Image (cartoon, rainbow, N blue to C red; front, side, top):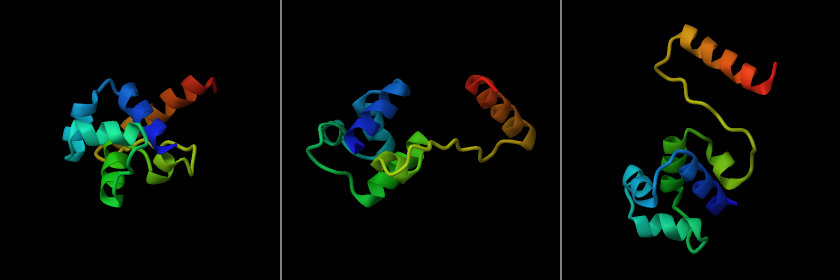
Length: 92
């Protein structure tokens, strides 16, 4: 599950393996190994990946289907606008 989530989130963001590796401080080869299920990232790297992607570690590990949206630094009004956009996308 982890390898699929990493690949999915990376491609959704339009970044390549090198760019993801640079973002978390590892080589392109490490990212490739994660995505191919050859090795698992350490706990520290798992946390960094979650931060880069704006998801929880539980989501990365397949323990939750919930994705989160980081809103630190946004005003209450901006957060409300994001909620309205999300509701609109859900068809509410």
